[in-house]
Image 1 (tube, rainbow, N blue to C red):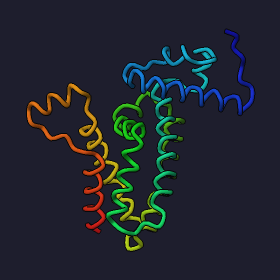
Image 2: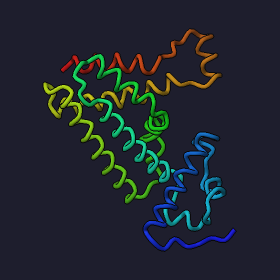
Image 3: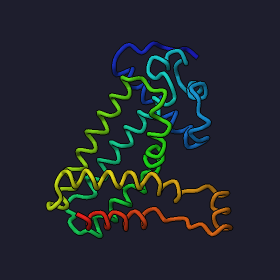
Image 4: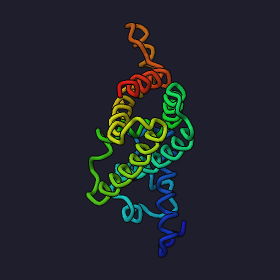
Length: 207
């Protein structure tokens, strides 16, 4: 295979997208824990040495994927919530939109515990800038749906949803062995959309 150097910003962007696409594909095939930079580089059209020019660790790659998934989720959510002022509809749409973004939900559970370690300061600043801008968009959308809520209320509501979602996702989507064991010992397995819908309704009513 002949490798060519990326000279323009457009070529660099194409390479970054290739890294993200390959990593996402591997995530679905072998899971986060089994992914290494070596495995990623095997499926790239450029060398592992060049991979290090863009990302220093697999955590940096997943942080970028997480940012892209957050932007995608924010755009879909805001589009879905346009003109909604009924609480039941709002809660159900919000919960369903979250549930449909499985990669985003999984990375959300990994984010603070795993992904944000082994990251350069520069990449971490970029990440939190993205998070802040996207969360601000969601805050303002919530206040459009419910004008009686202040931006502080919307901030609190979204914070509660994100924190609850981390735990709910892990308990809702178990592997076959976990499901079998939970059934044997009588542990309840929640249904993500239904439980998240009820949680959102209770929280909005608290303001």
